[in-house]
Structure formats: C-alpha cells, structure tokens
Amino acid sequence: MATAALDVVTGSILRAKLASVIDEMATTLMNTAHSSRISTARAFACGMLDEDGQVVALDNPLHLASVARTSASVLDYYRFQVAADDVFVTNDPYGGGSTVQYFTLLAPLGHGDDIVAYLAVQAHLSDIGGVVMGNYHPTAIELWAEGARFTPLKIVVDGKPRRDGFDTVVLNSRDPEGFRGDLDAMLATIAVGRRRLAELIDEHGLASVQAGMAAAVDYAERRLRGSLDRIPEGRFAGEAVLDHDGQGRSDLAVRVELERSGDGLRLDFAATDDQSAGFVNSPTANTIAYALLPLLGLLDESVPLNAGLLRPLEIVLRPGSLVDPAYPAPTGWCREHVGFEITEAVSQALARALPEQAGLGFASRALVFTVTKDVLIGGVEEQLGVTDIGALAQTGAPATAFADGWGQPGPSSFGLLPSIEELEAEVAASVVRLEYVTDSGGPGAHRGGLGTETVVRFAAGSRERLYACVAGVEHAQPGNQGGHAGGPVSLAVLRDGEEVEIGTLMQDDPLRAGAEVRLRSAGGGGHGDPRERPVEAVVDDVRHGYVSVEQARGVYGVAVDAATLALDPTGTAALRGGGGG
Image (tube, rainbow, N blue to C red; front, top):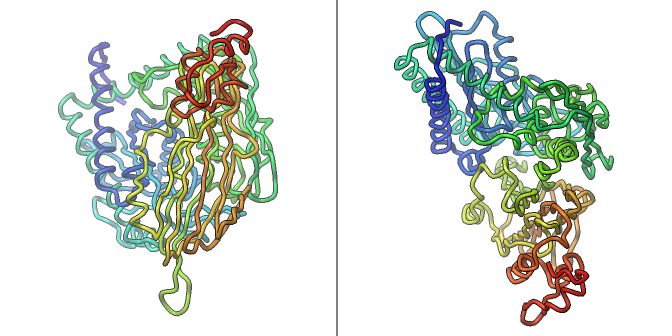
C-alpha cells in the first residue's frame, strides 16, 4: 500500500469524509429498500474496507466482526478471481456471518489496474427458504431447517449482472419480489459507495486516502487502548443466563473472565455452556461483536467503528460451546439470544472492574411473530407473509451510574419504532394497547427503563398463525450496585375470556377472530440503592405512572397518598429512618 504522510488535521478530515461515504450509503439503502426491517428497523450495516480487507469505516457496531470475517471469507474463496467490477453475495453463518437472514454484498473498487478498497452492505432480508417463513424456526435442530445457506457467489461479473447466480438466490425466497427489491437496493447502495469513494480518491489522491484509512484504524485502536487503561489489572468474572433453548434445556449460561494485562484486554469465554440443539447458538463473529459492545461504553462517538477496535482484544472461545458452535447447529436467534447474554456477561465483568460502567447490557426480548397462511393453489397451504409483533414491545434500557434508563438499549435504538398503521394494514388485526408497564423498571437510585405492554386483537378473516419463543421470564435483567432487577417478559393469548400464559414456545397457533396476544417486554435493571433515589424523583415517578404507590413505599421508602399522589413527609421520614432523602 502506497501511503502518504498525513498531518493530524488532514487525517481528521479524511476520517470524516470516509464516514460520510458510509452515511450516504446508509441513506440510500433506507430510502430504497423494500422491507421495513431495513427501512425502519435499520437491520443493516454499510462498511468500507481497505485493499487488505481491513474494515476502515462502519455504521453499526453489531456488524463489525461479521462484516470483517465475511469479507475475509469471500476474498479467500475467490482468491485470484476478483475483478474490479464484480459483486459477491453470501449469507453463511459459518463463513463469518451470524444467521441465514443476513446477506452480505461485497464489491471491490478499482483504481487504474489495481483494486484499492472494498465496499460492503450487510442486511436482514425477508425470507430465504427453511421451514418457517422469515427463517426464525423456534424448534430447528439444524441450520438447514432455518433456511438456504449460500457460500460466496458472484452475482455481478465485470459489471454485468449474472442472471443465473442472482436468480438462484432470489428463487429460494417465498417473497421473491420483496427479496429482489432489497437485493437491488443493496446493489444500488454499493454503486453509491463506489462512486463516492472514487470521487474522494480523485479529490485527494489515492496515497492520501489510503493513508487516511490506515490512520482511522490506528486512531480507533489508540483510543480504545487508552480507555482500557482505566481498568485495573486483574481478573473479573461475569455471567448471564438464558431461560431455555426451545429444546427442553434450561438455564444456559454464558460465562466470561475479563483479564486486564498490559495495554490490551483478554475475554475468556471457555467456561460457557456447551452449544445448544436449538437456535440460540452464536457463531464466532456474532460473539465477538456482542462482546465488544460494553467496551464501546468507554469511548465517545468521535471514535470510528473499524478494525482498530478489535486489535486490543484477545477473545478466547471454546469450540462446541454456545459462543462458538460447530456446524450445522442452528443460529437463527443469536442476534438476540445468546447475543444479549454475551453482552450482559461482559458488562457484568466490566462492572466489577469499573462500577461506574455498569448498566451497558440488554434486557431479554421475546420472539413473537405471525405467519400468514392460506390455501391458494392445489389445496396446499402456503406461507404468504410474516409480521413481527415483538418489534412493537420495546424493552427498557438499564440504568447507569449517571442516569435513569430510558428508551431502548443503545444499539437497539438505531432504528425507528415500528408503524402501528403499517401492521394494521398488513394483517386483519388492530393494536388495542401499547403503553408502559408500571413498576417494570428496576428500582434503584437510578431507575431502569420501563418495559411496555402490547395487546394485538385479531379480526374476522385473520389468516395468522402465532410463533413465539419467550426468554426473560425466569432471568430478568439484573440490577447493579444494589439496584434491583427489571421486570420480566410475559406473553399470553386470550380467547373467549380465557388467558393462556406462554412460558416457553408456541408454534403455528391459529389466531381467529377475537383472539388477543398480550406481550409485556422486559424492563431495564436499576443502579444503586433505591433508598438513595431522591424523594422528589420517586414522587414524580408515581405521578407519571412509572412506579406504583406500593413500590414507592415498600422499595423506595417514600410514602405517597394514593388518592392525591401527594408526598407524605412524615411517613417518608419514618420509612427512610428519618433521612427524608
């Protein structure tokens, strides 16, 4: 790589311009995608890699390791067969990916006779075969049941679409029109990235841009190593537990030992439980990405997301475990579970080393969706569409040492909230309730964010079948430094006045007219002793409906009149031992 020497100012300018290319790619994808998972939920990432395949810019940390490892897998597969106008596609969870739903497009950028960079787009696509439309199969015991898996494939060769390759991928989907629309949007995004990066090279020169790429990676590494200096030397353990795996196994533990030594950090997951027969296994790239998230809390937003963030880390995985499964174990739910448990375990270990960094994990989420089924041709029941009910029930963020939890946890908040009107237009159903759940935020000096309750009622003509896998019932998000756990997840189906609680799984359950699905999402864990929460803040929580009068008295030690919601100073002084708060 021929690079130029850069001063600090020029390096900063180029770093910002590289990021702007990624921003424009992301805007293109959001505005042209067919699926709301991309356009609204932002289940995607756009990235740029240097000529050696090193990630130099990215817009979503959840995809950092996956984009890096998938790209390396593609380039290794097509070694000596890469042309500047090619585009490659793959969705292999065991080739650097995470689940079969996430497809990666990788495209070289040519300059003169050389390939000088690569652009990547990784996105959640609508359906790619498998037993259940949408590829979330709660009782899958092998990857093939989840969907079709593609090793790297050229879909554009020398700038010309390769129709046989393109159609081979698309025709595996039950939604070929929507799938093709999203794939076209990803190709358009690649084209925008290529054009903008080429313009940047023309403006500044190849050597300067390559130097800017190298400087951006070095800068991210330097910033993270500097932040790791805050962690005292020693070993700190963390653990998080998943309720079940859908295959009859309970209490699946992710365990990590964080060891600070020198200017790096070692994360050892060797004590994590064995891999599951179910779809909660996390491939290596997914594990690395979720392990990194709590460490990003040591940095500010000025630090670019790139390969430099991975350099200070040594991550030890045990093959055959939940965090490094062996093919063909299913992985379909790994971006939530055990992905969330990986983040929570590292967060708990980090909190033991740096108590002020506690509260950087995720509350559990339930998988709840419906599949529209009908008999259309030849008497065969077909799967026609998927509706994500669970996306409506947003989890609460954990509290930190500095603030109450509010909204969704960080990386979950990239996307917009789903559209109720869009859901009601898609299926014969209506959302009759969507509101915060009182007392669901974990009590603490700083209170955890509240969970929500969503109730969806199905109308006459409903062709929906319910699928669900419920986690976070037995193991709610823990509190920190004396804070209490957040509220648990619950899911129930109500029919003819009878309520049936779903504790683990539900598959292919018909939702006829009048049936209601009620989902309560998890609340975030609290931080610090609830008795140290300012009295005025507790009273304010009661008046807003976040905390009940009973919890205010019994947990926070604050007496509030149930009729007037006015503070009882005398009662509060007695409850708090005369302190008053």
